[in-house]
Image 1: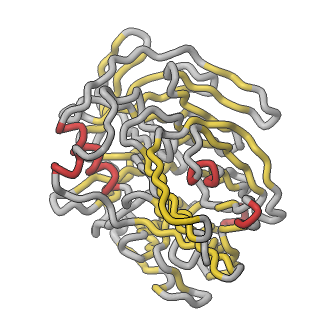
Image 2: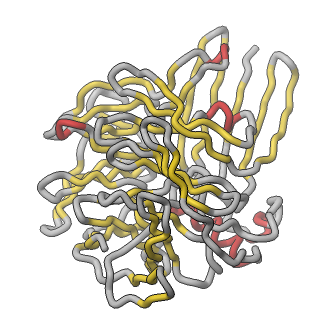
Image 3: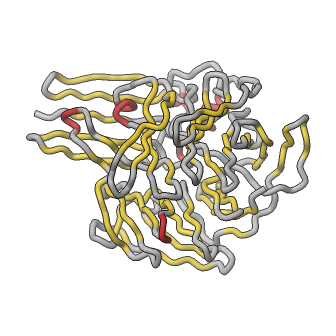
Length: 395
């Protein structure tokens, strides 16, 4: 008989920002408006979560729901498809993210095939390895699904074993891609969960689901490997250096937003816009371990279904959990704030000491997905629910 553990979660969105255009000031922390984009993609995507910028200005985008990897020249308006759908050496299934590696290489996260693929400087397909490592039967399964990658090519990701078990916090790992050596660099609070168990001792099923809009830490990584954590308890930002030294900023004042029907629908739409929750199932049959990971299959459009969740009374200060805190090339951390569902999206920008530097208003229907060399990449939802990639100058 087999044991199956299935973890499904609340996956919210990521931080956003934009180029300066005008801008208002409120005390020491100015509010900056997102300006006009420098360039816009000619064709939309189903989902974009990362953008990998090259030295010549072109970018690489992975779309897990569209099942495509595309190299774009946003200035020329051209696009080239890289690879194709399949299980072969030059193929992928549900390509979820692309990350820069040293030497002009790129790391492709291929959810559907359960592997990480290294693309060469000319985007030729190279070495692959499973992103699941260790022995699940001994409680040692590690899912190396990058949340960030630094300039040395080291991967950062959370310990998903704690998430699947319904723990209230988990470890942030750093892994050397060549040696696969792991070290713990931070501990972060997870969203609150509900846990359901069924079956007998020889065929147990456990379902762990995140409670929507429950407070959770958010985190990210700078290019030089500094880890930044936005703490949900009193909303402050702290930086963790390579030697473990912690530099924290003061708490940030905020007014909690009550959760009504509009906020519930906003959460549902945000979940859909980021590709839906990341589902992971681990099956053991006759000693053989099978790991399956997928994105998609989000929530229902029926508003009545939303009332079935155990909602908190108010929103937390910011988007946390599996939502990354993005760090730009100047070493600033961008944290997306929770606001009234009818208000434009805003992001708090913190410097390298954890001090709030400014707030950026990006407007409705936008979120930032990546930074480049003095550039910001955001996606805008169009009228068909597709995502248009936009490039801005970094403020």
